Amino acid sequence: MHITALSGGIGGARFLRGLRRVVSPDDELTVIGNTADDIWLFGLKICPDLDTVMYTLGDGIDDDRGWGRRDETWQIKDELAAYGVEPTWFGLGDRDLATHIVRTQMLSAGYPLSAVTKALSARWLPESERPPVRLLPMSDDRVETHIVIDDEAEPSGRRAIHFQEYWVRRHAEPTVRDVVVVGVDEAAAAPGVVDAILDADAVILPPSNPIVSIGTVLGVKDIAVGLRDTRAPVVGLSPIVEGAAVRGMADQLLSGLGIENSAASIAEHYGARRHGGYLDGWLVHDADRDLVPRIEQADIAARAVPLLMRDRAATDAMAVATLDLVEELRT
Ligand code: GDP
Ligand code: CA
Image (cartoon, rainbow, N blue to C red):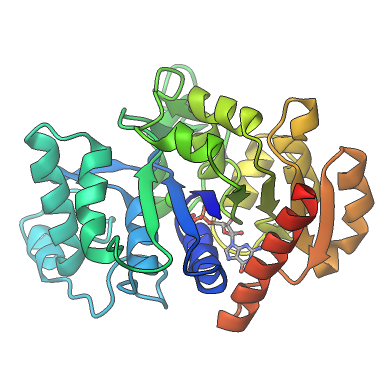
């Protein structure tokens, strides 16, 4: 079976680690990673979500932090701070920096991000491993999420800041007025992305952020069309549990965009494939089981199962439940 998943960072990566454990060694997994969080810092190209997926599935992640490398040290960060070089708010560990240096070197030599990601994946996700995981960036084109916040100093009273500045520097504190995904309308899907969706036996939307992770991937036109055209069932898992994000800033973004914070409203936001949306099936947390009829009203098959990735067993069970719903929808 060929399974294709869209993914952000931590929520997607942790779920995919479980999925990889429960599928058969003969299955193939393709992950289409969000690149709208990417940022250039100190002359280096950082791709936080691609790296989180790569490190998590490649067993190099710091599991407590959920991002960056295990056994990390921070000497270069300290040295940069000693020079007073900005920004000091973004965590770049010494081990992690090697990834960004290799990536930037290859980009400067003219390779597209998809080729660079393949080269970096050779270390973390070797093709010889079973089941194989292929990590593809959603696009080789520059796409950047900006968050519009209030700023009295601006004539318009508003200012757009890079997503990383909103999230990492400002800790998601400013009220969100809008989310602007710069460049997404013109972005083309990276090589292999559309085929991976069209040729898949199952397409999965892990419990990643619906706005700034999955939402930005779906913002790439060819990807949205691929998802609508594929014969594979498309099944997603709610990142919202009992009316709140399990972690991260989804709550603030949803409120800013006027979307109700519930597992049902996210399903409605994605919409049923039958009505031009993206979903055939949707899993909600068992405590949200009352929302199932409302989701089914929208022509999306819904099931309530435990959706908290507390440990390995719980995560694996979520992956099994996802494949069960895929199977149901295939028959
Ligand atoms: P990011 O790019 O690192 O923010 O990662 P993602 O977008 O892939 O994942 C963030 C989302 O994962 C958040 O909206 C969380 O609510 C969700 N999430 C994290 N842990 C869990 C969990 O255990 N269960 C569920 N259902 N969602 C989770
Ligand atoms: Ca992210």
